[in-house]
Length: 466
Image 1 (cartoon, rainbow, N blue to C red):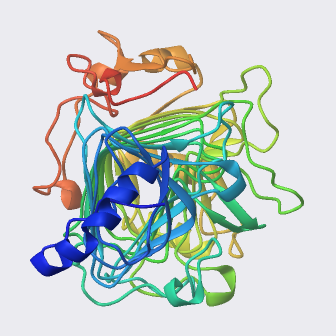
Image 2 (tube, rainbow, N blue to C red):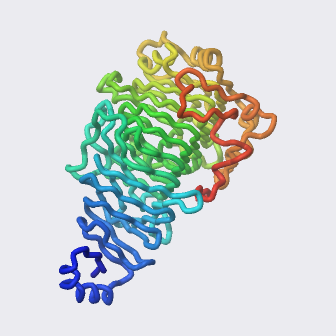
Image 3 (cartoon, rainbow, N blue to C red):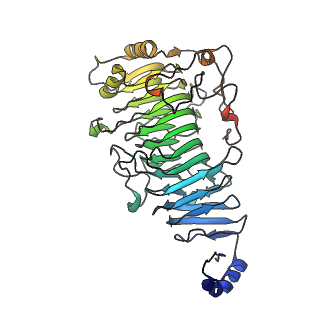
């Protein structure tokens, strides 16, 4: 199929004039990109198939729809610019995965009323129709994973570097729907995967909807983010690995009680949060440590609603040598447990105060506190963990979800996560102390992700009821 291509050289224009006319006459509604052509442009309102590798600066506009055919790589220092309101789609026969590789950038700056949407192109949309979005940077990781997950080609499998200020571009007002590509058991593409992405990267206002695997998974890196939503995804919503050491504020995790991915015989479970530093075989101590600093999260588990999947686990599982600070948050509805500290190294970080679940509210259908897989059982037990969390770290726990005081958190179709007047979710003042007394964090007064006076989760770019 032909394209009308802008040719700067006058002599080339003359030779290609008839070709351009013929191309216009032959254009159909669906066109196919040339891997090395920087801006093959269909007519306004057209559809463009994209496949292979993009190696030159490329611009996608809202007048057109871009269908990813399999794995598409942006490489060779190229920048992919995507306009507000642009739609990028995929069909289930060739689940599209867009990979922004080391040295390349994505500039996907949508707006509140014109988000950039990655979604299924099927009439009956299902999780896994779209593959996912992957950013690969040159910041620091700890080498826990040898290669990028999800079946990427051998030329794009490595990740990591030593530049924590690396810049992979911009993700703003972006929604990723029906993602998740399972190549093999334990080898999947998530909604948004960030591999050693640096702090020069701008990430805010991103929602993952109805993904087949994890919503967000961060493998090392130092980027910071605000206003993230994971909604009705099958596995973990926020999964931290390989030494991720950035900051996040204002984030939401909402679970569909009936929806988890196929765990097979793996023994895996689905959580709102999962934290790992390294695998068991590597001894947990690789550096940099997985150590996110987080404030103002609202995490909603299934809370034993009718039809809850047996594969649901905990609100938060901290394990395999990970450190964390989670503050000023509301965490509710964990199925098996609220927070779980898993293994001796992870426990030692909590006992020493390097990790903390601070000034937050916790309610779980299962036990609010649990410890697991300790070889030294004298380190701490569930009662000792409760004492540290509620004493030293100032968190409050509840057995009754209503006592926390969110408006309608378990209404999965249209959750209302705003605190109600006079309840602990509003009357407990946020505190920004220690490592979260940092310029990145907006010093709000309320707990959780939502300001009751200005609920950003009700904005036009956010999609519920899926």
